[in-house]
Length: 56
Image (cartoon, rainbow, N blue to C red; front, side):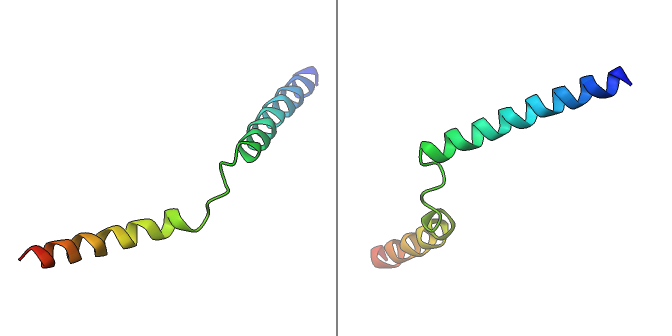
């Protein structure tokens, strides 16, 4: 039974660590730009193909 209490304590410490890391990332602005990363790779390919067609 004491092992169960130890495991619960360790899991709470790990969960608290992840919560602190998440809050730190939110404070530093890690999740502010949610639109351009997903769209950026689509536009990079189009601009490259346009530049290559202009050079020919």
